[in-house]
Image 1: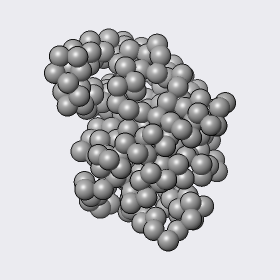
Image 2: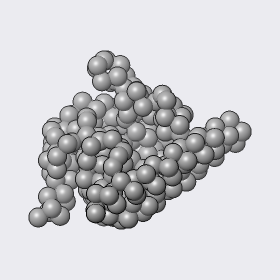
Image 3: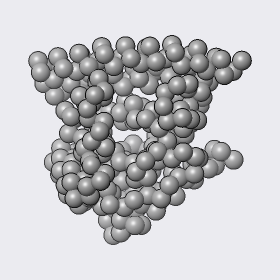
Image 4: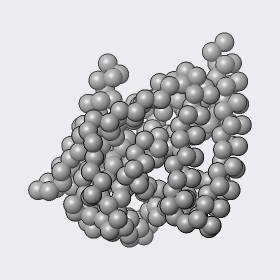
Amino acid sequence: MKKLLDYILSVVYLLYFGLLLVIFHVVQVIAFNVFGKKAHKKSVDFFNLMLTTSYYVTGSTVKFEQLEEYPTDRPIIFIANHQSTFDIPSIIWFLRKHQPIFVSKQELAKGIPSISYNLRKSGAALIDRKDPKQAVAEILKLSRYIHEHNYSAVIFPEGTRSKTDEMKPFAEGGISALLKKAPNALVVPIAIQGTRRFNPTNGMFPLTSFSKLSWTALKGIEPKGKTTTEIAEEAKEAIAKVIYSKQA
């Protein structure tokens, strides 16, 4: 019975999700080309609010917790574990005042209404994972951008989504590149839970209804005097402490 309900609610969700993609693609294009970047940012924020609340269609719950206030007068590098594509909208919505910009694989910048357009217009670092030189150059460009504007960058240092509840090793290269041009950035770990089980096949059908989805933005890590290895390990340990304590 539960599996049948998963299929039914997934169909309803996908119809709603597809409608949001089409509507907000048009909204973004108009906002960017007629009213400029600020209007585009607001349209993206609202789009991701709608995506976040769309999880309720499946009977799932959404919880966001922020353990401290983060500065707006310096750049921030958010480091999160990666479980599914559903990780992203809530980060954009709940941390919107910090202007989060993502490190993303370049394939996502084409062919997906709303999402691809935002990646191209937001200043995201669109990396080719088969070309390390290109990837570093893109991340350095983003690093310079967040330093100049006191924005934030979001990176998933596991690289790809984990297929289990165990986190993969955190790659240091992207973190190092982000700190290169923004050495005064505060590093903030984000612990994400529930999205892998919500989306167990890494597709979108069927989703697991009545899932508990949560994002916990943790205490910031000051990078001064620390190596990239130390920062990556400290971030991973902070995330793991939240994830595994809640699993116990």
